[in-house]
Every structure is written in structure tokens, then in C-alpha cells.
Amino acid sequence: MREVAFLAMASLGIALVGAPAVNAAEPAGDPVALAEALFQQGKQLLERGDAHAACPKLAESLRLERATGTLLALAMCHEVEGRLASAWAEYLEVIARARKDGRADREEAARQWAQKLEARLSTLSVAVPAAVAEIPGLRVERDGVPLDAPAWSTAVPVDPGPHVIVAKAPGRETWTGTIVVAGAAERRTVTVPLLALDERGPTQAIAALELPAAWHDDARPRRAPSWSATLAIAGGALADSGGPAVVVEAAGLRRQWGAALRAAWAPSERTQSIDDGGAVTLGSFVLRACGFRGFRPHRRFSVQLGPELLLQLDHAEGSGLRAARSVWRAGWGIGVNGAVDVPLAAWVAIAVVASADYAPSGWAGRLEVTNRGEVFGPAAFRLLIAAGPRFLLDW
Figure 1 (cartoon, one colour):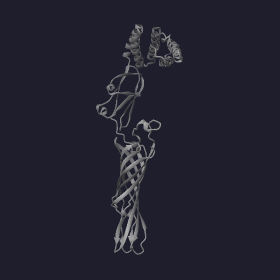
Figure 2 (cartoon, rainbow, N blue to C red):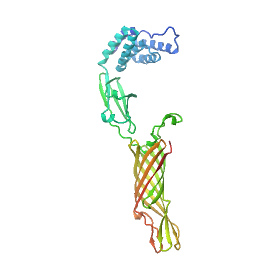
Figure 3 (cartoon, rainbow, N blue to C red):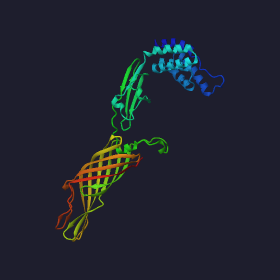
Figure 4 (cartoon, rainbow, N blue to C red):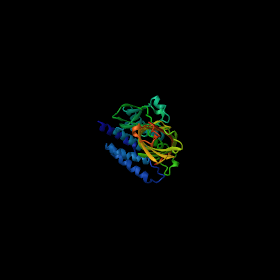
């Protein structure tokens, strides 16, 4: 029945289609000649009822030369293919163009066919709740076409098949939803959920900053690599030694998960007096192996948190003591590490790093002075806090 109805419509419509008008004052160039050839082939296929083969030829002819007759033929083709929304929109355009051209026959025929399609059109609405609409910089797209706020929650005719809805905003994870319109006269609605915060790690937060195209040599946006590497140099304090510390951290990150080596050195040595004129001086070097997960609770900063393993090396030098010699002591500990990064540019951020570790007395060696006992007993808790720049090495 569908093919019979099509042939009946085609017998009337082909007469109205005619041929694309060519300006006789100008020679027909290659694009115009090709458009005419494609139109004739498409029209013949349409007359035989082969809409599947006719539509691509008519669409290409229309792209080369936007003629009203070609547009009408393509609308008929799309109707038979079941692409009712496309056909309806094309019929409406034919009405406007035919009125302008003074073709009342085409205008009336296109209006009647468009009216018959209206009851069979499927529609799709994209609903954006108030809480989602308030997200700064929200961008909603349907099938790659941006939808501004006035178009939200509006039922729009669509062709059958899958339709992809995308919602994105700065500092939020991108949401993608797919809905399939199966046939005619369907009424479908897609509701955009509240976008989750973008919980990416510090290096990805830095890499994701948008820079002006002129900053890039090739004027194309750079993609964040699957692995990111950073180097942080900071100044702070070691709580157990009570003095300043220089901290260097090398980190690698893949998605939200990462690992780092955090080294701290106390440049000011501690001294403990032994009797009259004798003393022991202690210097410390601390290395922490860290694992962490990155979070991004706000678009202006990122956070990392995870466990760590501590190795502390203490070097003692005796002075003014008989048979004084230098000795080393090693100690172990476990704890947690954390950091907060505030991006300044695509290649640098300000980082605040912190570590807290527990080291039982049995996990460390002893420093003893003959006939004097132990000196500089190891602290049970080892704390570190520092701040400084973090550089993205693979920017």
C-alpha cells in the first residue's frame, strides 16, 4: 500500500517538479551540469518507486544547485523513506519558495502534503530542569546542533532512528544520552540530569585549561595525554625536626589515579650537646612513595589523596667526643598524603602538599653514644607540609 500511495503521489508530483531552472544568460558550468544530471537520474528513480536510490542523487543535486523543483522531489523521496520530519521541513521550504516564484500549483501541493504529514510526525523534547539550567556555561546539543535555552523543553519533529543528546559545562563531567525514535507519531522526552563535578586529578585539571588558539603553534586545541607527568618544587617544614625543608615531588597520573615520589631534605641540622664540649649533629632526608586518587571538587582547584610509605635516613656526626664517627640510621613509616593544586596556566599550578606518617620505634634504628645511651630518639609521627609551583612536563 505504501508503494501504491507513493506512485500515485509521484505521478502528480513529478509533473510539478519539472526541471531545475537554469539561467540562460549564463553558460552552465560543471556544478550546474552535474546538478542537472543528478536531478534527472533521481527523478527517473523516483518515478520507478526506488526512493532509496533516488534520495542521495537528489540531495547531491540540491547541494550543487538549490532549485525548488529538486527540493520538492527530495521531500517526496524522504517521505517515502520514512524520514517524515525532513520531508515536512522541505515541504515548508517549498511552500515559501513557490510563493516567492509565483508557482501557486507547487505551493498548494506542498501545503497539502505537509498537512497530511503533521499527524504522523514524531517529536523529541530535551528537558533541562531548573537546577541544571543554573549551571554556569551549560551547553546542550542534539545530534551535534547546539540548543539554546528557548529551545529547551520544545517538542521538535525528528526523523526515526537514534538521536544523541550532549550536555557539558566548565568544571562538570560531560553527559551523553541516546534515545531511539522507532516509528511515526512518537512523543519522546529526554531529561538532562544534574552534571557531576569533574573529578579529574591535578595534572589533568591543568591540561584541560582552554588557551587562546594563538598560543598554539598549530592553532589547534591540544588533547590531554593518557599519562601526565608533573614536577613540584616546594618549601615547607618537617614537624618532627622542627625546621624548614626543601621538597621535590615527581608524579605521574592516568585519569584519576596516580603515583608520586616525594623527597624532603632538612637543610638545617639539629644538634644535641653531650657533656662539656661534645655534641652530635643530625641531618635528615625523607623519601615518600605515594599513591593517590585525584578529585576536582571545584573548577578552580583539584585535590589528591592517598596512602604512602616513608623511608627516613638520618645522618649523625659527633664532635668533641672520643672516637667520634659518622653513622646512619634508617626508619620506616606508613601514612597518608594529600595535595591541593590551583592552576595558574596550562603548564603550571600552585601546589600545597602534606604528609602525615606513623613510624613505630621498632621500625627505626638507634643512634647511641658510648656510655651516654641513645640520642635523637625517632619520633613516632612524621609530618610534612610545603607549598610551591607544580610544572606539567608533557604540556
